[in-house]
Length: 210
Image 1 (cartoon, rainbow, N blue to C red):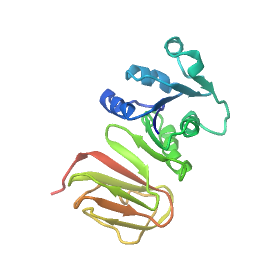
Image 2: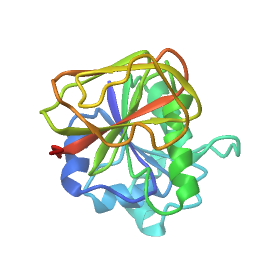
Image 3: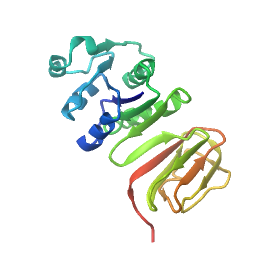
């Protein structure tokens, strides 16, 4: 089953949100994300978290039995919501509303890609990028010029790419701008890593360098 989790950050366009929701068998809002979901016209199946951010207006719309309190301080509402989706049977989880606002929250939200490694196929979406963790290898199947950025969250060893304009061969990457703004040259492109947490940002636009 595929699930959509709506976090309480900057929402994407309604078109992207509705497209992802149409593919999902479950829509979960991370606490105040319920207000973002309702504003996008989504039907929310569950609201999960410590429930200190959901508005009274949202509570008047969403049935009380769809609110699930999870108050542990050791995890964020986004983590709790992804875990809820997994427990409900999701094998693929798409996340929207995870960026914008406070930089610390946005960076922390990206960390869920590493925290759920091996448990679920997880992606974070906004209107510019689809963001995934490279687990061994990822294939980027997009038209020539599709923007691809690789960001190492801590040291990554043995990064190898093919099909990109500027390829890497068994390269070690630190947490740095190295790897930002590449592009697909020969689709499908491939990115692999031997160890470490490597995030792949797949752009939703084409930008060919001259």
